Image (tube, rainbow, N blue to C red):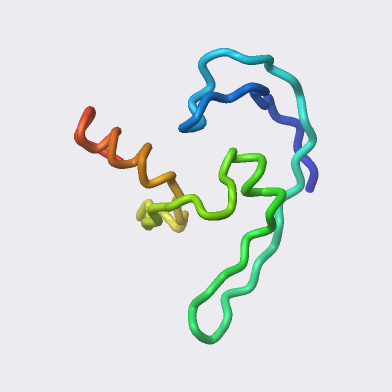
Length: 86
């Protein structure tokens, strides 16, 4: 299913959308398989949409409702120290 969602161009480091240009983009979800070792490969396009480049350290956790959350480690640590939550 294709969806149209707002996307911020010109995101600053850390991915926070505080400026730049807002445009509508068409996003297509990807269906992934978990291999026998529990690994999943994410398409580079999805990572690029999120502003995550190869080599970026990520924090991953379960949101407890069936969702898995990937966060830039730097952003997650800043939120944890500043707000007390991930």
